Length: 367
Image 1 (tube, one colour):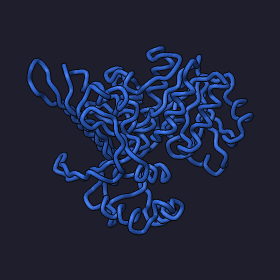
Image 2: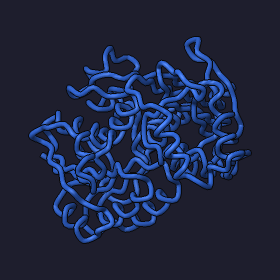
Image 3: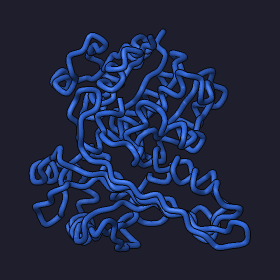
């Protein structure tokens, strides 16, 4: 039985803990500085809780020492502290961050490390990088890689056509920070909320636009090998225009605390959501210009006996699968490990990764 520490007792941390503990193969300690957050944690013999402030380096290292791995489900601005403590404690490190600066810090820490450092293990970046890389490998040469992901309410009922489904801080960060893209073969930064497009999937119309962090390390991996590569977040039409007005016209991009307060007190959360994943790769194979597409929708369901939203399922399954592959020796055991090093077929056949398998009959059968 592997001993795991999860930092952050929010909805995602609670979902990961439930998934891992349900297998009987992991003993999980969930750490958070707020005892009230532990209400998100199921009572289970394989789960215990620890009150811990990650800024207390000594206490954090003490909790991590002797464990197999630490999984950070903490806010993006605290994740770097967890990575530093993991290095000192000599444990494997995994996180869910979409923050570009944090990932660069983790990569630097991983140089010469005796354990694995695997950032961006969620949905986007994370699973979408694995899918895009799998499609890209089917071509002799690449032209374009387009990655689209959105966590959306099934029943939108406001002008934004949106409900809160995950971290408000992470959402705001994606809407504000610069975005990486490959344009004419070169890695560049482009502004968030721009380059809006529309597309339809299963008869539903969506919009998509630039947001930060979704490309993950795949941008570096494919730089110079693809002409165009970008990541855009999916929303229902009309969302982007209102967000741009809030951020730019009302200058809330410089008042994140006000924007967060507005979102959390005006946009209700929901467990009735759907995650839309849409990846398209174009290139040349055997002399012909071809296209390969992966399209999938994951709905809220029951995993490990726990009712979860779609974003909980997809995010928690991403990091749980990577941990499971690491623990079974199917990923490098030291140094910096990129998401694109994970084989898609191996992931989909994993007991956690099956939630992403479009051929699965029911989500609850995945674990």
